[in-house]
Image 1 (cartoon, helix red, strand yellow):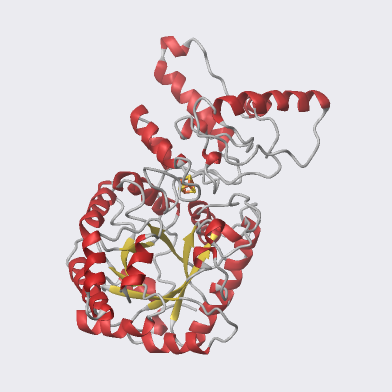
Image 2 (cartoon, protein in one colour):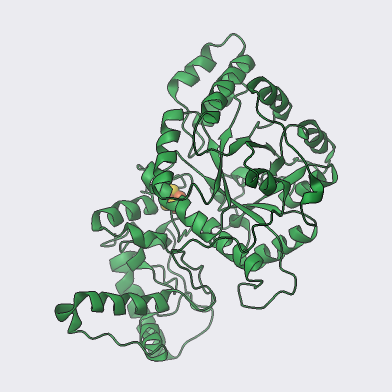
Amino acid sequence: MSLFSPRRYQPAYYPYTRDTLPVRAFTTFERWAKGVGFSCRMCGNCILQETAFICPMTCPKGLRNGPCGGSTPEHCYVDETRPCTWYMIYERSEKMGRTARLLEVNAPLDGRKVGHETWLDLIRVYREKGHHINPFDFVANRGRFSEAWDRYFYDVRQPDWWLGDDKYHAPASTEPVSELERSLRAGRFTVTGEIAPPLTANVDPMVKKARLIHDYVVAANFTDNASATPRMSSLASAVKCLEAGLEPVLQLAARDRTRYAIESEVLGAAALGVRNILCLTGDHLRLGPGPTPKPDQNDMDAIQVLWMLRRMRDDGIYLDGREMKTPPKFFLGAAASPYAALPRFEAIREEKKVNAGAQFIQTQPVFDFGRFTEWLEAVDKRNILDKVYILPGIIPLKSAKAAHLMADVPGVVLPPELIKRMDNAKDEKEEGVAIALEIIEKLRATKGIHGLHIMAVHWEEIMPRLIDESGLPKPVREPSAVPA
Ligand code: SF4
């Protein structure tokens, strides 16, 4: 057990290039010392000062920018025998008065540095960037000392190809690039739907569903191997949807891709006409049907993907700095999990997503309205509601069995009284519709909401009825207004 961080989940990294013998000996010492102190995995980019001295690489997903949607105060959802690393980071940051430091967008790892020593790197950066820290200032002028210290460590942890910060970066253009963006910018209450891509190579049923909901929703999301379970790719599904006349929202899970694959895929998506991209970290591989792929940590998280795609769009650059003559056009979105961590903790992560590039947020399904409003208030306190469109999630429950399964999904809270209603219902489907309509009514009357996202898991045909009976507005389409 280490002194400050939770137990190390996976062993420390080793470099794939060989250093000289003295450096290797030094690295061995560093690996041991930081292992005892922080369960260090030798990631090569230490951000302990940003994470209240708890190593984020002890998170099974290796998340470097906050908790995933499955975190709970009790345990990590990947391994229930251990605490959530990020919950511990939030709690300790709060106690130490360091929550502001959680807003900086941390870089993904640099493979060339992973496994190598970093203490010698500190000396190199100090010299190369011309830093000067006067140790006497620690007593004589604490403010000046802290400023010089922070500037130095910023240069250490933020490589030149990333330069993450804690500021909001508005999109470079206010011209809508999709129907979804145009509808939201026009101030219309906007409804999106969700269609699960097929489990087979036959797209006909999916296209039929897309046509069925075309007149009811502005755009439809296509999940990206949700629950780490393989299906048809979200990109192929999105393109088929586009051909059927309905605008897609491409869900992009960082889990299955390296940064190279993500850059390549989004350029391909843009070329194929896909404009809305919802950036996700993705469920852990453990949730999949198995045999489980080797348990490496994610190359990137959702916040890093947002940061990278925003810069591709607005600065026209790849992560490595290469320039693009024709940058892609994206309307970028993120997911939020109002019920995962405490609302004030989740709100930090939402602010970070908005700062990184999220223009709209779709949430996990709302069943507990009171807890949802707590989350919304916490988000409002962070002054981001004027920078992002919020679309809370709605799931109509198809049966009592579905309700029980839903209650077990990490990050979803289904109040016991709703489960009881489903258990006691004479007609379970009708009860599920009634519950969904009640929640829609409450959400529509809530300030700060810009629309709804209906996820009728394998029950897409219920969407038109829900929208008709709740009186939700139908889409207004002016395709010519959106640039190609
Ligand atoms: S719950 Fe999520 S964020 Fe927390 S330790 Fe587990 S994988 Fe990481």
